[in-house]
Amino acid sequence: MTERILGIDPGLRVTGYGVIEHAGGQTRVVEAGVVSPRASSALESRLRELHAGIEKVVASTHPDVIVIEELYTTYRNPMTAIMMGHARGVLCLAGAQAGIPVATLAHSRVKRALTGSGAARKEQVNRMVAQLLGFEKPLEPDDVSDALALALAYCNVREHDRRLPEQLRHVL
Image 1 (tube, helix red, strand yellow):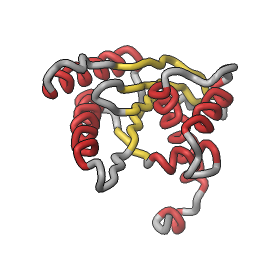
Image 2 (cartoon, one colour):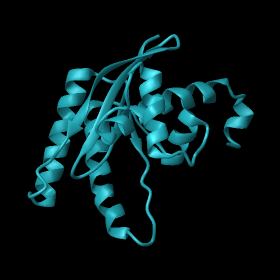
Image 3 (cartoon, helix red, strand yellow):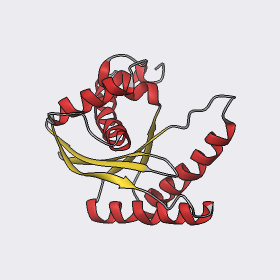
Image 4 (cartoon, helix red, strand yellow):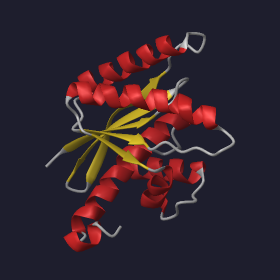
């Protein structure tokens, strides 16, 4: 069975996205890029642009599932978390409006699923994404690599969870 997964690395300045198809252990990139709302615009305008951009991606690529990175913050940067929450909200809304399930993965889980270490550096994750997808060089910009990492990690995590006995799923 072929599954199409849209990974999204949310941001108000640059949102990376990557669509992959996964079937029978084989994975290929369908499309990848960025949505970049005008930085000089008011928040509500940037959110509208972000929503419209992701709606176009969803309409043209027809994903089966959308994977968005979970929100992470530290006490030093609460405004960053609030702003990212706005971006994530319109991305989730776009999925809901299209009737597509939205899954979330923590950044550390993405790193662990791809490299074996939740503390892997961004460069390590980017190299692994490039290797898994058959690219000779790391991908640019990082937003695209991060989005594809989310989609790939989702495949990895989903396959792992399917193999777990039902009793263990509730423990992990």
